[in-house]
Length: 266
Image 1 (cartoon, rainbow, N blue to C red):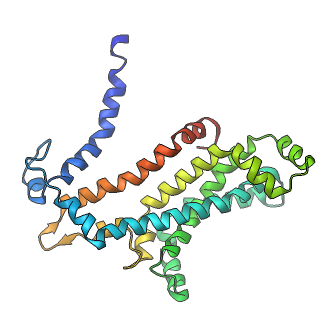
Image 2 (cartoon, rainbow, N blue to C red):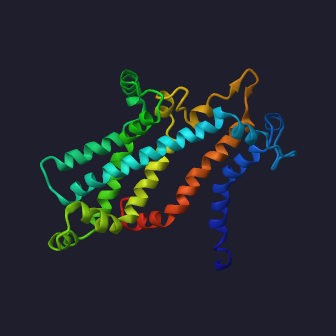
Image 3 (cartoon, helix red, strand yellow):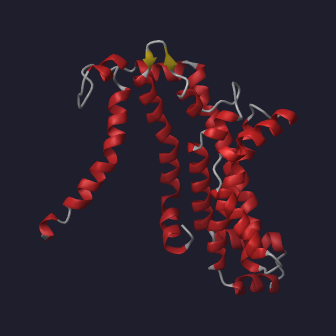
């Protein structure tokens, strides 16, 4: 049996990669070929789907808009979650556990609950159809997640580190930035990764709070229907390109994610 121990993980990896391969396979086909029959590879390769995405501003600006508000949300969420998680980790105050639980309940609530309030609020203050609107809306879900992850990492750091730094004359913010943050770098990487991914794949709020100028790629993909049906090849090409940002982020934080599974609340 030891000779075949590679068989199970190989089958599992093939099973996971099959949808990605099929997406790429469809992206190099025309819609007529996709609907015409089953084939493991395109009979005639076409780059027209990718060409349209990279030459049509409606499509490529969707990626720019998505990356803009996702990047803003990731930075804001982690920046706000760091001091909040430190407070939950190091201090005890009245209602701290209730407040911590309340933060997590925001992450549990479905986005549809907040879509209409956000729409009315942002329309009233002039933030509708902006990157800031989507970035701030996603903070409602990502900040509690980042606080929860970072609090787990910070609780694993001995309090003696703080006390030693204060005895040596470090002011709080210098200690926090120069000593404490490098100590929990793995936790910051994990929190940033999850904030990025959750914001990148969220569709309802991003679609509700934008119309033209800040419309994300996911919303653009839902508007490809025409009188002849959906442009399946174009949708497959757009879907294949949406995988790239997530893959790049995973590549840079892969070591932090591994430590997160071993040490933090992941």
